[in-house]
Image 1 (cartoon, helix red, strand yellow):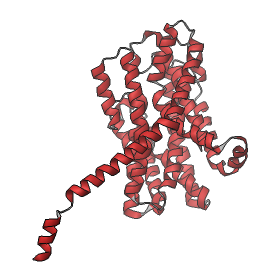
Image 2: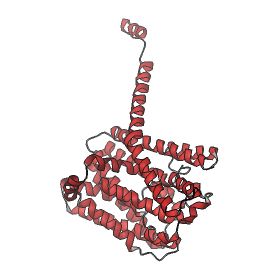
Image 3: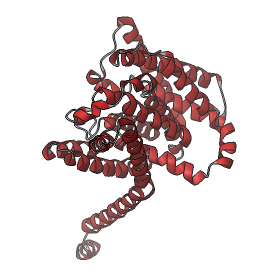
Length: 372
């Protein structure tokens, strides 16, 4: 799954660098006029890269279904926090420093940084890419609640719930013929209505890959794939219109279906790939997709602008930017994030010990109680 995660991350990067940047970038980079000098000729070849996010959601459902096995809800949430928090704090800090260096108002940047560091489910965020973290956390909380109430063995029930909620949502959307704009549906996103089927598909995939195909699971996969295609085709229609092109809606749909084929073929593909690629390298690349996703848009966009200001043509500047953000993501995943995570774990342990000591009754009161 790590290589599929890498491919999904690169799709998202290609979307921003090849299409979104050509239209002016994100809300943080609107004042950087030079960012619009990317050739619009790249848009037809990259406008569909956003589908990598949907593939990420499926992979997340699959991975979380595995990590939720045989653990308590508290342990599960603690593990997810150790995975999400250190890298997000590092990437938010890096992006904040870059934005201040580019001339963005420090007070506003700190406001955005604080929102991202606190994992606020709604804006402000230091980078627009943080919009998916609230959706992921909503899914984690539902998984933790399911573990607490029914046990991890009932995650397939959660998958059916998510799939049916998405079915209801898209039934209404198709009936009225209008989908809410992304900016107006944040609370629907956090309720997992538009994207719940992708997480559910990952849960069903995990169950099939570990304990075999059953009729109910096959039905769940079919329903989730169909719902996923509804979301993707609808998003493709709006995306192509926004970019002023006549891109085929079949392109992102085909990419999604190909990715799902890879998910279910993973047991067959893993052995030959393991003989070609070192497992430790593949694992590191998979871990680096998270910081790459968080860093590439605004921090990467700033570097692209600076390289152009230094006299580089758009294409060489973009290639150097891509190399730099990949290198930064590898540095965060391989060195900085593990170090910060270890420090946070030690600090949390020390705080718990200190609190336990402070709340422990003094010996004199224990002795007084025993003498009564």
